[in-house]
Amino acid sequence: MLAYILKRVLLMVPTLLGALTVTFLIIQLVPGGPVEQLIAEMRAGTRGEAGGGIQGRRDLDAKQIADLKALYGFDKPPIERYFSMLKSFARFDLGHSFRQNKDVSQLIREKMPVSLSLGLWTFLVSYLISIPLGIAKAVREGSRFDTLTTVLVLAGYAVPGFVLGVVLIVVFAGGTYLDWFPLRGLVSDNWIELSWPARIVDYLWHLTLPLVCFSIGSFAVITMLTKNTFVEEIRKQYVLVARAKDCPSARCCTSTSFAMRSFRSSPASRPRSSARSSPDRC
Image (cartoon, rainbow, N blue to C red; front, side, top):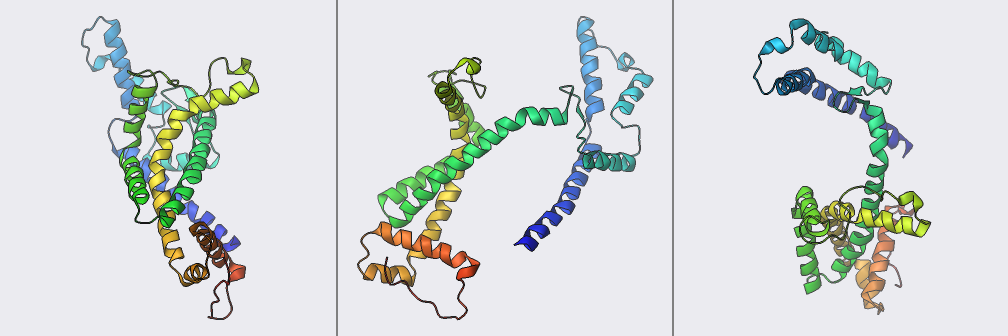
C-alpha cells in the first residue's frame, strides 16, 4: 500500500508539469491576453469620459503599452516566462489577480471554506442516499420501484447542473414563484447574533439549494454502481445457499453478501488454496 501511494504521488509531478505547460502554451498562443484586455478596458474608460467619442490607438502610446507588458512579464522571451512561472509555483506564489487586485492565494483562502463545505456535504448526502437506494434497487430488481427510481436518478443525471441551479433559484429563491430560500450567501448577515441551534438551522437553510443542485447529478452513478455490484453478488452461490437454508428475509441475504464482499476484498482474508467455502448460515 505504501509503495502504491508513493507511486501515485510521484506520478503527480509529470501530470502537474504537463498541465502547467499546456496552460502556458494556450495563454501564449491564444489572442486576447491580460495586456490586451487591460488596454481595451482603458480605452473604453477613456471613451466614456470623452462623452462617447471614438478615439484611436493614440489613447495609449507605445511607452505605456510597453510598461503594461513589463508589468505582466510579457516583455521577456516565452521560455524565460515559462521557467519563471514554474519557479513561482514551486514557492507557492500564485501571482496577483489583475481583475480583483488581490493575491490569488488570498482569493483561494477566502473561497476555500465555502468550497470545502459544499464538497463535504455533497459527498455525505450523495453516499448516504445512493448506497441504501442502490441496495434497495438490487433487492427489488425488475419491480416498479426499481424502474421508477432508475428513471428519476437518470433524469436527474441528464439535467445539467447550471440549468437545475437556475430552475431552483427561479422557483424557490424569490425569482418568480416562491421565496423559501435565500438567494446568496452561506449564512445570514446576523448569524453571529443567533444562538447555536439557530446558527445551525440558518446554515442548513442557506445550504439547501446548492446541496440539491450538486447532489442530484451524482445520485445516478453511485446508485447504479451499487445496484449492479449487489445484483452480481446476491446471484452468487453462497447467497443462494443462504436462501436455501431459509434465510429470514432478503435484507439478511443482502447483509450477508455485503459482509462477504468486504471480507473477500481484504488481503488477510484471501485463501491460500483455490477452494472456497460457503457460509453455513445467514
